[in-house]
Image 1: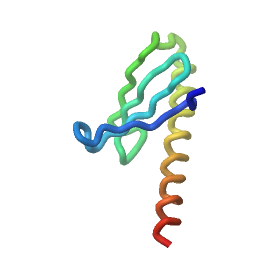
Image 2: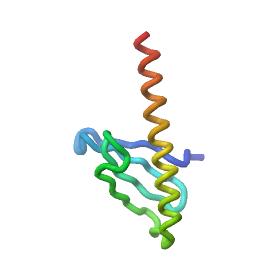
Image 3: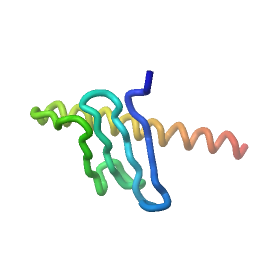
Length: 83
C-alpha cells in the first residue's frame, strides 16, 4: 500500500520546486516552492477535480501538514548525522 502523500522533485529541470503527490482519490500533484508550500503553488489533477471547494481546502491542509512534517523530520535526520 502506498503512503497517502509522497514528496517528489526534479532538480535537473525545476531547481526551486518540489511536488507533493496525493496517491488517494482524488489523486493530484501539488507543485510548490522549496521556500513555502503556498508559494508558486499549482495543482495538477490526475483524477477529476473535486467540485466542492471545502474538499480541496481540506486536501491542501493535509498536504501542507505532511510537507511541513517531512521537512522537519529531514532536518532532524541531517542534524543527527552531523553530530
